[in-house]
Length: 414
Ligand code: SAJ
Image 1 (cartoon, rainbow, N blue to C red):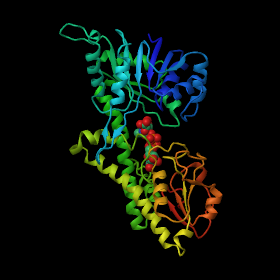
Image 2 (spheres, rainbow, N blue to C red):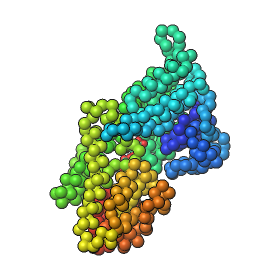
Image 3 (cartoon, rainbow, N blue to C red):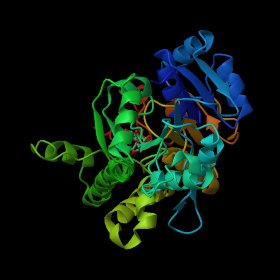
Image 4 (cartoon, rainbow, N blue to C red):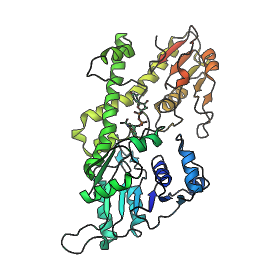
């Protein structure tokens, strides 16, 4: 049924997905616009950090099931996993689906009757319909010429929901939402994913599948905002918010998430804007949640400013150590990281040393200004210790006396 598939976009989702199909003896042509990425993959290496992926790619490339190319080829299925960034033209970012549209145009001449096209990129509701309209313009032959204009190809949306760092396992065992433009499209897409998916394939329509992805991440952003708002109130009431949440979560139907220094990553902090930008007057809660999570970063910077003022030293003699720069625990990914932004903000106004302790990263070429130090050196040298990311290396540390501690993750609070 699917001897050969084309995966357009070899990033955090496209490459693991391409590797998973090729591991299951499907011939995969991975397509990307970056020659560097193409060369890296064809040499059996990878350009992203995902445990277990390097071995999968190396094996698939060496046994010939995975090839990376600049251009698409004829195939039985085409998966689109390209970025859907945002245009930050106002305080409400607007989604940009131009990469998806370009990907559809790039495959349009290779599509034949009976093929399957799946959009995996997180997209505004209606983007899968947009794919249909682009193909109607470019490939009228793919539609029956009678009044029904019946589709001779199958088009579906199948969003990914893997946790970065656990992608290989979750690609196989997570349930998959599959939303076809027709039931037949959904069933064809289900046959494709059942090549490796062991979770349940839940069939629905394309718009519901698009909305499901945005819902999952927006719901998490709202829940995190609630936890962050609790942390602001508890700070004023001199209540340990971590103890409060632990106590409240003993209720059998309460599950409050964890406060942090803001919300990072390229998903939770991003996906709500797909809905807010298209439904401004109907998404007040989601919009407020975004504002709370963005405000929390500024609140942490103010806490650091006040801590500096309380120390009886000249500002340029005071050193601040930020523990953690990545967007979440135990990853080296700093995309949209609140911790990195907080570090950079403090460096802007503080005259003394601003130290970074980041066990997952030793140097950041694009950030030469970062002053890295080991955990022990930072603990003894810094006057102010700011915990921003709950990396496993930061648990159980013996914090020296007489240090000002700002713990945004609750792992140092007694
Ligand atoms: N965070 C908190 N408190 C919490 C949980 C998370 O402050 O209780 C913060 C984290 O520190 C981080 C941010 O939220 O800065 C996002 O972390 P995350 O682990 O919630 O999310 P991601 O971006 O690693 O992965 C999410 C997942 N979606 C959901 O959990 C609903 C994943 O399943 C998605 O596939 C992924 O987004 C994605 O690619 O969309």
